[in-house]
Amino acid sequence: MNTFTLDFFAAEKPFYEGECVSLVVPINGGQYGIQAMHNNMIAAIIPGMLKLTTPKGDEIIAAVSEGLVKVESNHVLLLVDTAEHPEEIDENRARRSAEQAKEAILQKKSIQDYYAAQAKMARAIGRLKTKKYKR
Image (cartoon, rainbow, N blue to C red; front, side):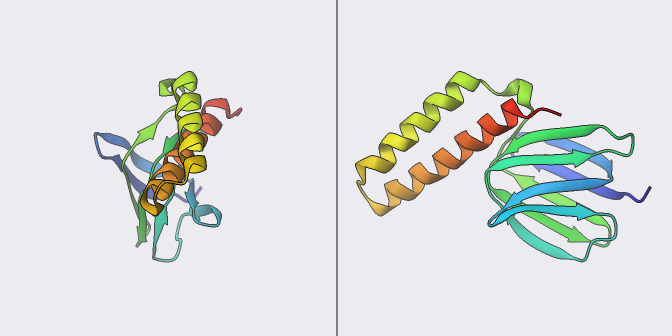
């Protein structure tokens, strides 16, 4: 089984460091998959659900916020502001956050407030999807 080295860091702590078989990250336009010997690239990460598979076959999922992923010479560096395991997510808090963001979007104050509310909504939806993900 071919693997690559993954260094996955959230702003506050390392999330995963080690060998990886596959990685699926949320990017603009959908999900992007990475496997061993992937071409070099850099991409922006958007809020959503990330999945990685270890050499033992374990699947690790996380709700991630914005960040970036860099693939170079069979090494992947993933940097995000936040990363949470499903058990770390407070579903009620995520629902409240989504409702607040929806209300802010509907108020249409300024373009800056609108984009901030959209980002908040995307993060809340990503957290809820991750919490409800069934393996």
